[in-house]
Image 1 (cartoon, rainbow, N blue to C red):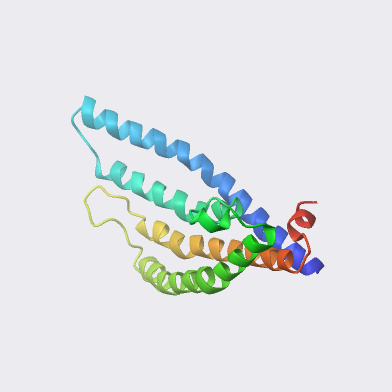
Image 2 (tube, one colour):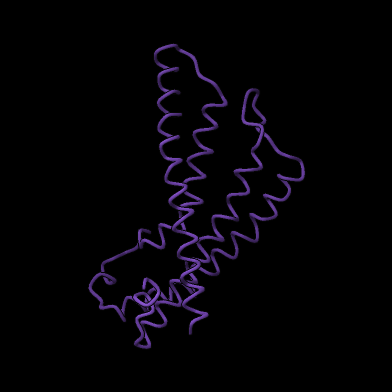
Length: 176
């Protein structure tokens, strides 16, 4: 039992710290987009590097922050039934969702994107556009890493949900 609590605590803390770090990147996105808009409308010019940086940072935020979003129960779901259920009913839905959808979905994406990222690293892929970002392989690596973080957080959610179903409040024990 202490191993399971420790595992859940480690996963939760890992995603919490990564999410906290990623949250600072949102400020950088605001600065980059603001700069791009000013350059485009005030000076009638634009740079490929800046436009690519916008979507690289945006992708980084969503891929690396998705685990913390799951930790905070912030993912979109159909709450018509879920919100009306008690803790055990919600735990059943979470447990079934993790086992049937989250784990297989994450596995498929990790499996395919790891090869995708590997090939990108092998050639040190950069932007095909002149003046673009030369390190495209870095953002492609965020795909399997981000989904690994979601998978780990899903495992933590599944474990906590299972214990809620059997009558133990693992969530409260982990926070103490």
